[in-house]
Image 1 (spheres, helix red, strand yellow):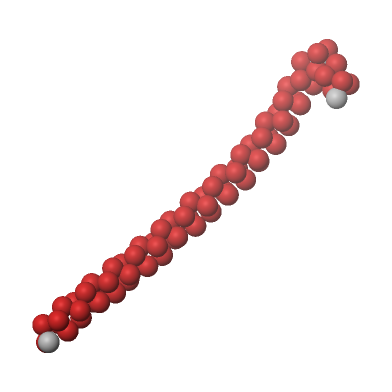
Image 2: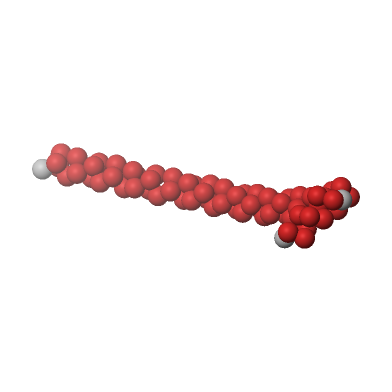
Length: 76
């Protein structure tokens, strides 16, 4: 590392080339992070849709149960 640093200190061209490589690597890593975040966002959206279906189903079951209790009470 010290050789690279010393080379960069003495040669602007070497510094520019090494910076270009560093930025390219950073860009690749950032692209990977963006891809993973997109997948995570899709998974969260899918989970939210599934959770909504479960909540609607549970609410429907509760309403049906309450209605059947009312009907049984009225029939007595």
